Length: 552
Image (cartoon, rainbow, N blue to C red; front, side, top):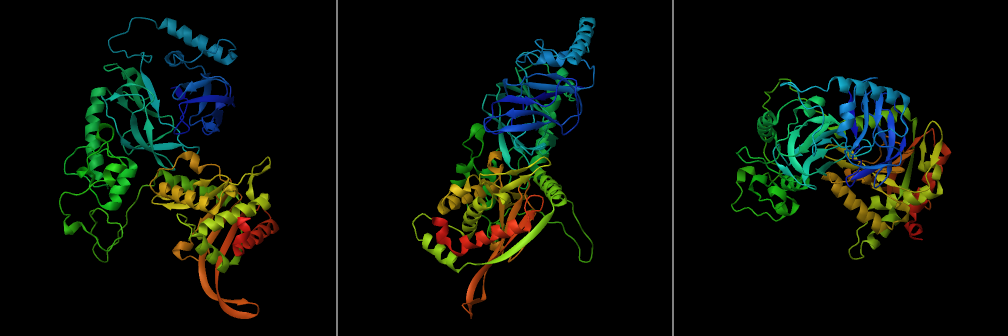
């Protein structure tokens, strides 16, 4: 069965996209993972890959044309397959009559013949072959450049609800963040294709919106889903009960759904607040950040729920009893983020020949400079901020370290975008400081604090995690004195920063107490040679041991 590919939503603010270049033409054989086209969004031009295999039967948006998100972009299926009904569904799309491809023309001619032969009165059991007027098929959006699948964390609408343009339909978990997905259409939610907790590939049918009472059974069947609206309503009631009973978040004893934003959930979790006790001020009673922050309990909390030994009390959960001496293990399903981390780091370590260079930096002057800077009101600079600033300035002098490898060429980046590794609950994310060399220490400090804070509550936007040219990973705050990191490709290097250690050092022939810090540079030997990496570290040491030079 042919698969309809819609214009993807490649950024959280994208409402339409422009096809910059088609890399495939009608009649070409498509493999899963092939790049179909380059699509220009409101923020960048991105490669759009196929998640289906087959023959490209139809192109709905020509090069240079702009169309709304979810417009029919292409159709992939078997050669000679009848796609007339699928093409006619996209009423806003242009036919390719001006310059028809010979293979497509042949395919369409066969389709028209079949259509004429089958244009007879419908039987009692037949189902609609085309999408009725006003009905829109919503697919799983591609919310980041590395996203291949998405998980529906929460549905904020249910089948039968009225939906207005701009309403939040669902919260979708990508490989990098949990993001709110808003509707670009108005109508009634007629169908839900991916239930809460389920994961599906990008472009899978997420929902169908249209006029109330519209028969969508034929459409659902077209996409491999033939449940009726009545069946879906029953299914959603049962499914929602299961989701609530299995949730780790505080809930009430009833089966009522609790609608809350991811940030509100995290704050409630940290404060030990039961969301069932909080009144929401958002759309349809949805609980938002301010509701939780302004919440005050009307009665004392039972002392049985207080855990004074933990800094952030967590809701009590049932513990599995394991008798002494018995073996016990449990499986934790891999999150989308965990799977992507595993894939990307494996690709990096097995494709890029790593080598490591370590130096020890005297940090006495850096400690004095930081103490002086932090006496300025409303200014807070960390040692990590100083390392980032020093790296940015050193990269300007050693651009080969700020490069990217490809089979065709080595790309030398003259812009300095430094990724800062941040540990989050599910793994690791790398928000990016764009043009870090042009920032002051205080600007770096403020931006890092903001990005790291939002990373931990999954509120970073995909564009804030794209485009790094170099990465810094710091485990010094955990007491780690020295370690190595895997390069965050397509970067050519990553700097691992250890803790500052007070120890005996030799100065001017005398043993004195000093403060030192070890840093290790992991380099991709395809782009960075040993001498190049060593020269970069020498420059980095100069900046860190003489912080005044970073202010020049």
